[in-house]
Image (cartoon, rainbow, N blue to C red; front, side, top):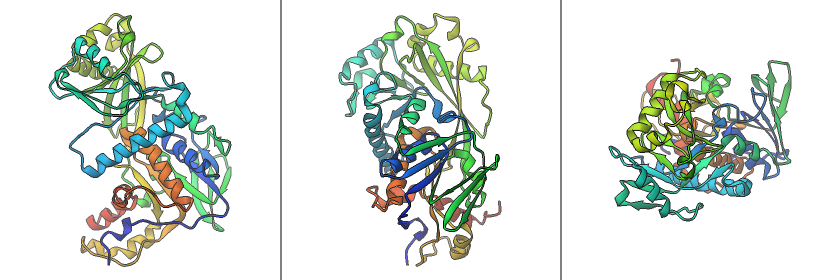
Length: 413
């Protein structure tokens, strides 16, 4: 008898025909495509959009950093391992474009209730001389902690991930049905196109629940808005990322990014002046002298700002959904006793859909967890043993929410 056996490791049958289809060409899908292709698999990656990385993965300066927090040690471990792996991939495929498509200047984490002055901000630049430095530092005099971190142009990163010769992107395709026919997955689109594949990876963010509604993945939409502020002669020399209530990036193509707002369950892609005002207010609160140094243009006024809006998928426990997909009907019958005994133990492993994996719900830490998720899935489908700790894999397992629905008797909710 094993406790929560539905979360235990599962090794799929390795396919002789190494062909995989991925739904979703954002960071999660592109990361999985890269990890599969480098193992020799033939990859087709489909998306509703006409090009990769047009949704939440189009952010031109996504932040990658890990700082100590009150999060559980397991979650902190996920973030640390994820950051290290993303750095590894960045060096492998974007190493020559540092300073253009990505940079690693370090992140100044402002302590709560403190304010960043121009003097302290400039002094902080002297504490990291190597732009690829990975060791954490702190300075008690600055009321901040300097951590390893940087920014990445997600759109460029995603497109670089897809450059492998084994990967083919196919856009403007709206998947309307997924079936299992003759030991293959068959997908149909709204324009009557049909795709057949051995293995399937679902990576289309919050839209995944529309294709697999009965799997009870509670992935919700989180709308985020970033504000762009033009650089000034003074701010053009700023190199480090400032992160307090919100964040301020070094200028990229002469524009700083300030953000970001977060609204759960909001699907609007329209920019809002009120969100620009919120971003600006938090920058004024965290670093009034830096904000004042940027107020030299009408485009620095919230009412005149432009920016970026993206929709991300988030989960109730703030952890991504990464792993194999179960047969829901069999799962609910197999573990029905959970409805009456939440601590019930079982002997039999769940029945999984053949060679079907999911990677969604990465939220605002997608740059930390999506590349790692793609690597884990690729290793599993290729018959490799995961190097990630079992408890870490269980914390991200897709079946955790289905089991909770049984325990709470909310399967039909």
